[in-house]
Length: 194
Image (cartoon, rainbow, N blue to C red):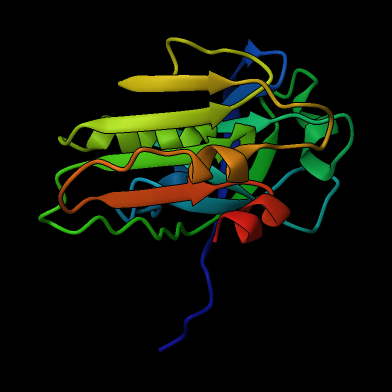
């Protein structure tokens, strides 16, 4: 049996600017007929856009069996960034089968989420899919108050390419009992937090 990821052709059916740094792409079309969600709330897919051969990874914000929603962080430069900042409706992209890693134990009584802008779509989907008290720390340049459910602490990045997420984690007052901690973001900060 092959473990090679299957690729699916999709069309950008809608594009929405959620903030200065976040663009929503809604993908559809018959090429997604064989796409199957893992059901894991932080699942991601590889995305290949026109004119590129290398995939970049994005969290699946939602999949309803017909439309695949990806919220894409746009930076000043990047393979997908420059493409996603234009009107890309009607263009054809390729997505891979999804993979996910979120594994909250069945007995967890609470959930803490910590992440930067790139983690925002995963944190939103995770927070919407659990039924335990959830606390989120989101370090993002735009406060998207309706984007994340539950108790959220919005943190402004201290500067370009800078983060204080490791400092935030050091100061967390951990809830009592068994729970689950999930984090994602820029690799140097994640190493510092670990």
